[in-house]
Length: 93
Image (cartoon, rainbow, N blue to C red; front, side, top):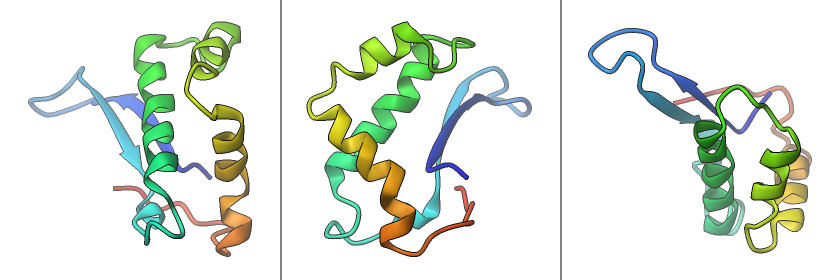
C-alpha cells in the first residue's frame, strides 16, 4: 500500500525514462489532502530518481528532511489512510 512510487518505464517509446505514479485516492479536496502534502510526496518520489537503487538510506532521509515541515508531512502521509478509511486501497494512475 503506497501513496506514490517512482520507477522506470519498461516499454514503449518512453522505455528507460522515470515515471512517478500517484494513488488516485489522493485526488481529493484540499481540505482532505492539502497541496503541501502532495508536493512533499512528489519531492519524496523525485529523490528516488536522484538516488536510484538506494531506497530510504541515510542520504535519502537527510535530503528528505530538508523539505520544510517534513516530519509533520511524513506523519500526515503515514496516518492518512486512518483519517479517511482508505486502508487496503491501491489505485494508481
